[in-house]
Image (cartoon, rainbow, N blue to C red; front, side):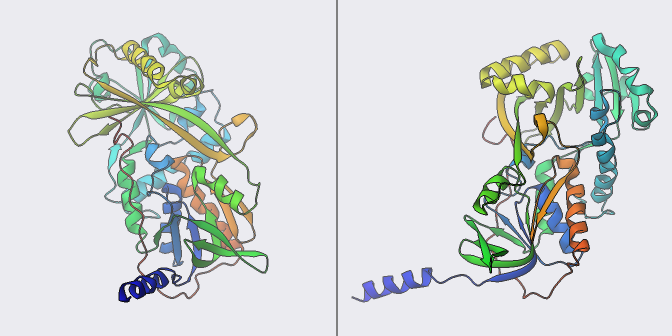
Length: 406
């Protein structure tokens, strides 16, 4: 009988509800946008809890190429649009954070390249002239030649023009790890997230049965935000997904390259970033037009064949006979736009205590945080007095995007 009694006792203990928590801002979604916002809020004295159902950065963030755009590629059509102007200040803000002098201390995050490049193959070199005639573009770019060229393009067979952009490329896993450190004890691993209502008003969330009350709740869960809104019975803001079919290639012959290769249209023909792996080889991560609509429609084998053809045309001097290839499908979650257009800025919608947003690009994470902070200030939300958080189950940090694929 004692055994039965003990088992019953344990089952009772298992049903004890975890203690409720209170905080200023409850964030759902541990990608770069949510983590950046969390760190900004904590730095300004707010109490926060950030909830993540899987791994930190494991959704869109780690599948990003890590380019902190200044918008130059959006000006390829010849005119600076709202997108390129809104994003123009992002490289400066990220550089200051990386130097430890900005709005966050990101010193220690690995910088893969201090510049991104615009590369026009020999056949297209003429089409850059009008693009660079504009003063706004000239201030951000400069032509490079000879030993200033990216290592992968330093070859006698290379014919074309290369321009250095004042943009940068980050190692996203090290960024996620650093933002996780800045979160301190505010991170909470979760399996189930449910709304917590009082008198018909959303006052917090129930996380695996634990009540978490907050002055404001922020959904920054990327593709997971649609599901969170549905759980609240909300149809707005509507979300769209713009799919990509990215390609990875790993070979001992690859050298670093961070560049948009121009095609005939307004989008880069191919965008290449390079990522160091544990065995010393490089992975090239290929996006751009290759990964857009036609690439999305192709199966993996067809997409790899298309990538092989592109690289054979563009960098024929690189021997890829021993290369390993894989593809990765990515959904970019964004506020719904007419005709699946690319949103120009970070997006934030509000309903009572609930704030819902998408940064729309990794580079715009600081802009997303700005918008949340502006909403708090406008509504007179200031740091309150909350009991210190107990030790919470912490979500893991994601591994690199190629892990298990190459």
